[in-house]
Amino acid sequence: MSAVLISVVIFNIVLALIVSLVFVPILVWMERRVAGFIQDRLGPNRCHIGGVRLGGIVQSFADMLKLVFKEDYRPNSVKEKLLFRLSPVIVFVTAYLSFMVIPFADDLTINGETYMMQALPIEFGLLWVLAFAGLGVYGLMLGGWASNNKFSLLGGIRSAAQVISYEAVMGLSLISMLITYGSIHFGDMVRFQGELIWGLIPAWGIVIQPVAALLFIITAFAETNRAPFDIAEGESEIVGGFHTEYSAMGFGLFFVGEYIAMGAASALIITIFLGGYQIPWLNTITLKENIEIVMLAILVLLPAMSYFFARWIKKNNVWPDPDDVRNRETKWLIIGLIGINIAVVLTLIGLLSFGISSNITNISVALIQVITFVFKLIMVNFFFILVRWTLVRFRYDQLQNLAWKVLLPIAIANVFITGIFVVVLGV
Amino acid sequence: MGIKIIPRHGNTFKEKLYLPAIVGGLKVTFSHFFKNLKDTSNIETLCYPEQRPKDITNRYRGVHRLTKREDDSVKCVACFMCATACPAECIFIEATEREDGIDEKMPKKFSIDLLECVFCGGCVEACPCDAIRMDTGIFSFVKKKKEDFVVDIDTLLSHEPMKGGN
Image 1 (tube, each protein chain N blue to C red):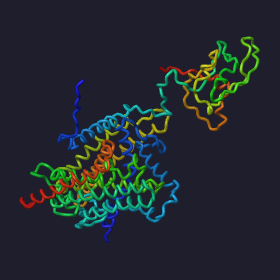
Image 2: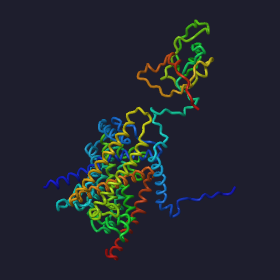
Image 3: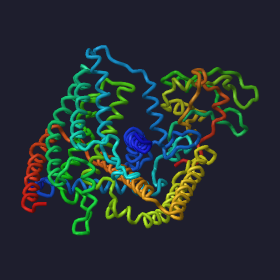
Image 4: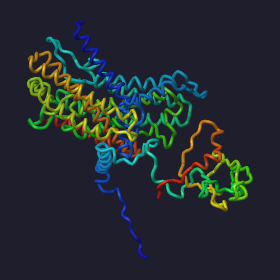
């Protein structure tokens, strides 16, 4: 156990914690603000700590605190007390564990030793993810059943039926991807996507297998119980679905679990279809060879982007009452932005002038890839949110029709066609 | 009158594919999002306690006020017409003799319980000498104690008619 190994493992676990747990308030905030902007209103923007609002993100933390300190009320009609308590935990834990095998960057080599950049360094990541994606629905089913309430039971049944239908399609769309990549290790998949087709287009999964990508994205929406597939919740028909009887942090865990599942689904879509941590046309080897050019590019691009961001903050971060403490925030934000810029620029100039060793090259490439991954994660999550505020909910029979009569035949045909291609072309 | 045949939608291949329609919807929502993200000042939302609504009409029935004569004395003659007309029975008047010779009677006490008041405007209709009006435009009236909602004659006289309005 060297110090390097321990620090890499700790870095990965902390990173997995950040992109799953810490992302939840950010995602809730994003959801509410994006919904507001889509519907031409403002969304939460009032909550502040000493004037710092960060665009309203403080509201999410306030809401979480409220959920933690509320009375956890359990109706007397609940007989299965253990299952009632256990089901939110199942939802939360399974969603959280599927994050553990997502590669955040390419394998990191320090002092000749290679470390896998996953929180759980295993090579059968896809099986792990499939196992936990299927387990997550047990939480909803058990919660719906243990609530001893007709609406909750209906919600649980709906989510079970939905997952049975969509899990099949999801598995089949993944099989065609397995045939294409020839591996169940996420690292191999992402390395495959770093190559170019005919030296021109990045070989992302969505380019090679657009049908499988579409099927997987649709089923990922269904798997995470997000609109337009949120019939398990169905607040307009069955009150709250499976979480009708839950209050305080029991509900909070369901809520957090839903957002972590959304993040995990986004991470899976990115890893399998959107090139993972790869920047298009700049795979790991190219990045390592041209690290000085990349650093120079960051040196120029970061201040330029920060300048436009600061202008945007100045224009939009205003509060109607000029004497309010919230109006001082803009100044602090811009000072912070300048501080970050100075720190990054000085570090980069120092690295460039003192020369870059191979260890530093590898670490900085890994950092660039982590940032790319997080950026892609935010973008795909934004897409999830945009879809939720665009589409209406499916009716239950439409949902089953779509799964069994449309998606499943397409998925099976796709597997066959992919297989024939691979056998005939011998790739 | 011929029979009008309305074409059924949803049977062409493009419509059955759903995806073009979904992409169209995403385009609409994203354009709204991007427009508002670029410049939040376009959003109509009122940040309420800081920004006050400016579109209260003249006929809006706000909290009452007692009007005054030209010499700033109270116009009310304590005829009890408003208290009689009031369906909520929330107007309490105590009459006294008027000493300055302008009129015979005036109210010593004139209080309205705003928690009982239903803001029907009946008192304004009933008043024979235009002494009570509801044109202040005050729509939010917040106090800490129940007793504070019974406003007395001095408060009612101090209310000003709404400025501007449309």
